[in-house]
Every structure is written in structure tokens, then in C-alpha cells.
Length: 209
Image 1: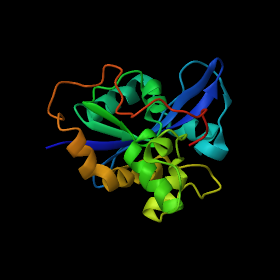
Image 2: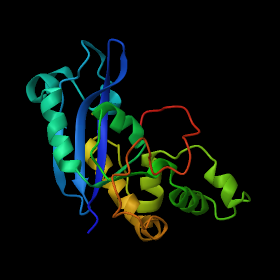
Image 3: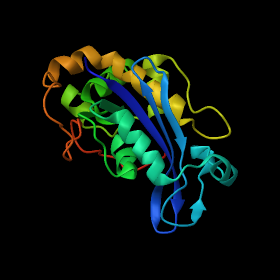
């Protein structure tokens, strides 16, 4: 049985490091929270907590932050041999340093979700499927609003990585059957090895998810 898990991370900026891990959340296929850890950012002093987007504050890290090595060990145990789903997931996985998972699904660049989103937004879109697929990625917030009829990232205290991970999983479920049909080799060897299940590299500049 395939073990699907969705991940979302919140980042802060430290001296010399633009995206430093400060929170990691993982949910299972039923959106149950398997892990939700605040992390003491490695690499030195925090210069920007990005609270508006991350929801992270100095007080939260001081009170709840776990040592990076401890948090990463917990993450690795949860993700071992799983199919990991995320939105712009390469940024999250880079912050985790390694991932013992079996495969990666990045819904921000998934062609099926892109087509479904744009065809829903504009039923008379004149562009071909190939042209739509080449468009820049769509934010998690827009995907959730359009395809799940769910508003996320509404709070004034920043994003919730748990909420974002749950939305990510539910968006994957929209195209799960088709994805499994086009990726039948889930029982193969570890497929990570710098291979993400992206259709193509991101065509847009980095932004806050």
C-alpha cells in the first residue's frame, strides 16, 4: 500500500541564509497531523522572522523550538519510504537536507492540476494544453480556493503549515487516480536521487507560499 504524506515548512531568514527552517508539518492521506515541530533555525541569528507569512515569532521559537538535529531525525522517521507531496516542495526538502522518501510530488508544477485550475478559472481559455502547462506555477492559496472551494492563509498571524499541508494533500487527491495511472512504478527502488516528480522546472521567481 502506498504511503502518501504531505509536507509544508515555514522559513525565516538568518544571517547568510535566505530560507532557514523554523517549522515543519506533515499530514497523512486522511490529513491527520503526524508531525508538527518548531525548529531552532540553524546558521545563526534570525534577521527576519517573516511573521506576516510564516506565523513564526521569537517567542514561539524560544518556547517551542526543537534542536535542528532532533527535528530532522523525527522527520526522517515519518517520511521513510513515503510518497511525499508538497507545493514548491523543493524549497522544503532543501531545508531538511535529506529525505528518505520513495518519491516526490510537487503539485505546484503538476500539469494535471495546472490544466484543471486554468480551465476552471476560464472555461473559454484559448490557449492549448501545452501552453497552459508552461505557465508559471499557481499559488497554493489560489489552487485551494478554486479547486477545493477552501480559503486558506486568511489569518493575520501568518500561515499555518498544518493547514497548508492539509490543503496540499486534498489537492493531490483531486488528481491522485490519474497520477497513479501515469506513475505505476511506485513499488520501485528509492526514487529520490535529485528526481522530483515535477513536469518541468518552476518558470516563476520565488514567492511566499
